[in-house]
Length: 369
Ligand code: NAD
Image (cartoon, rainbow, N blue to C red; front, side, top):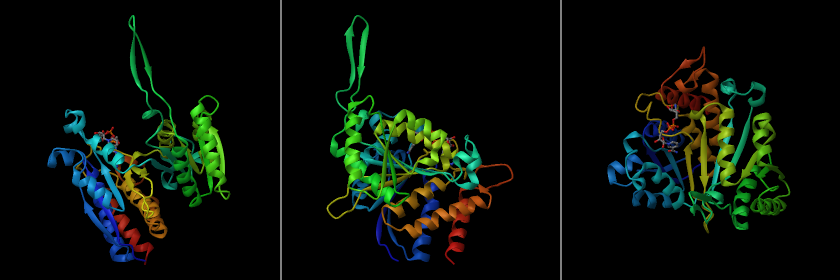
């Protein structure tokens, strides 16, 4: 199988370039051993871009991102940039590129590898085998709704206000992504709202139901967010795809992340709307940040970045076999007892970033021989 697909890599700051380096090796491996070829361009984002070009999001990066079929991002930020003016800070680059690409759908899988199930703070039988997907609407809702602000009421009193707003189009758009995801998984969508209190989410529920009617092969259920928070820690395996608003998704995805017990293992994807040719802007990145405390020491866990790459294979390029191969390689190295320091457990073998990358390469070779 061949795939001549263009890919923009933005290593960023801190451990970003280290973890990206291990993915670049997998990209080369895919080209050599599977004839799956990517045209890879490397670009600048965040602090690295500020150092080189005086801005965290250079125009060349924006142009390259629009041209690419998918963008792969390491991480941005670091203490040296904290005192910069707001608009020059690395995180502005990240928010800027998400906005430029119109990324409205944020996918955060919560997957527990058997070998790491004991790292969770929850009981083994609650999390073992967990594989759920949280889909968060990323560009609407109360984080962006107008009016917003704080007004002076006089007499030393103030009033703060934000607005929870969604249009039916926005709900249907994220709903369609949820059903597409579920079609490739266990065919179940649970839409989370607060329809017993908030009118906007009554509308959310109604629109989601309409989307569900267009996908009769997929089961749709609804749940209130307070119950969902409880269910996520009580019995997370009951879910397949969870779809929810920006703010509820922000909170629930972090909650679900902790079911897995480790920041260095969590990938994510953000998707935009398809254009006329069906091409969908997409950015893949680990959930973790630039980890300045361990940067440059060979301590970074590259697996969240590797799993972000596997999501890219699956969701941007429909290369499910290759994605499965990468996921299996990750599972095998963990089963063999290899651990970077962040996921180290008693009796296991601690390895560096590069040695973890070597082990992944060896597994890929073994799995495809
Ligand atoms: P962080 O995720 O960078 O680090 C939190 C802790 O987890 C640290 O102890 C770090 O060493 C550890 N850690 C994170 N990723 C790891 C990995 N792959 N392997 C091993 N250990 C890992 O969060 P933070 O310390 O709050 O933020 C550091 C910088 O990153 C800040 O400038 C922040 O703004 C930025 N940040 C960027 C992103 C992003 O680029 N998407 C996300 C979060 C934070």
